Image (cartoon, rainbow, N blue to C red; front, side, top):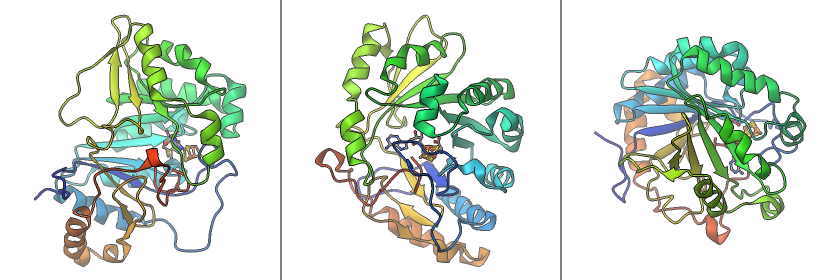
Length: 325
Ligand code: SAM
Ligand code: SF4
């Protein structure tokens, strides 16, 4: 049995948010910092295990832990170890702001995390501080070194490019991929409900980046049939590669192979959808897993063809920390 939507897209990849909370205050995501609201806490270790087990039984082979900042959870190491051990999960990945990476890289690799994405929007400590509210630029860079030493299968650096903020740093990011197999991923700034003005001031069209890459001798890599939405580029003088995430491009949704499960147990069929389908109530005991499975199969059939971001429709997504980018 394989999860499939009404458009024939099948799903092998789940982004699992462990928390909405974050210690950083990225200007495009949580500029005022995370504000705790009253209400239920994030999914427990057991709830996460049950969800992952059912998703895997329906053909999902890759899970990415995200947030908020997933690694702020005190039980993060146990969660990673538990989910890596779920039968059928071939690849456990993590997206992190890297604030604990330098010290924890080896532990996380040993726990079974195989792919690591580290967000780093500037290589300049002052700019990094201005974007995130934290003075941890060099620490995160050392964390990336530690990740290579720890032996993750893939290490990617995520940088959201913003006009007038860090768009002059493209060559600096690329230099990090010269002598090691780092995959630098430039992410086009996305408009979310909270940040219309910020988007207007700082958005850079992905075509501009593609033009710069082409001028620097980077050539597009042929896309594998099961590849996600990133467009990849290679260069003969670089060991690493570049990926461009361009959510406004016309083909972005056609290759969407991901589902999202929020830290409160809601299934999100699109990052910019209008609703999350509450599923937590069927994760309360192992006996409910069959019911959870049936409801999941029915819910995925409701996934729409694509988002309507280009029309300014951002759905219910106020910022990406709520359900993971
Ligand atoms: N806290 C972790 C981190 O920053 O890596 C994981 C969650 S964060 C929401 C996941 C990714 O979404 C990060 O790479 C972040 O830069 C990206 N992101 C957040 N808001 C965004 C926006 N409005 N446009 C584009 N990317 C965004
Ligand atoms: Fe936190 Fe990640 Fe959002 Fe930055 S992008 S505020 S690190 S959740």
